[in-house]
Amino acid sequence: MHDPEDEGFETDPFDLDDVVWVRGVDYVAGWRDAADAGGELAAALTSAGFDTMGLEWRARTNADGAGTVRLVLSAAAAHDVAALVLAVARLGKAS
Image 1 (tube, rainbow, N blue to C red):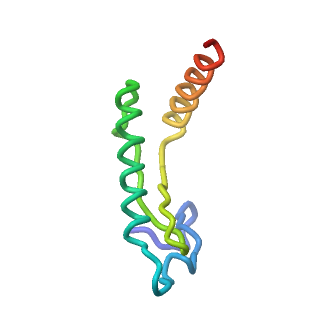
Image 2: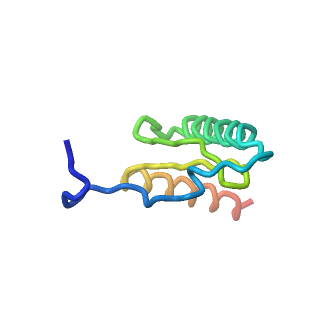
């Protein structure tokens, strides 16, 4: 068990938008859009041959109800994704 005062213990800073809900804002639609987008991203990376087992993503919404996807990956995975994106960019310039 870690104590929040221990060195190396990290938490996200408190974000008031994470706890305040505004009447009339459709958060479910935003979350659903983010969940679908995360699934699309996972499928695209998998079909490109990328190992998604080390990735973690979470569907969320902003205070205005817009969907967001939080992606967490290791440094090694980030290098791999960057190389993949650069390879696709080079292919696009070659066309």
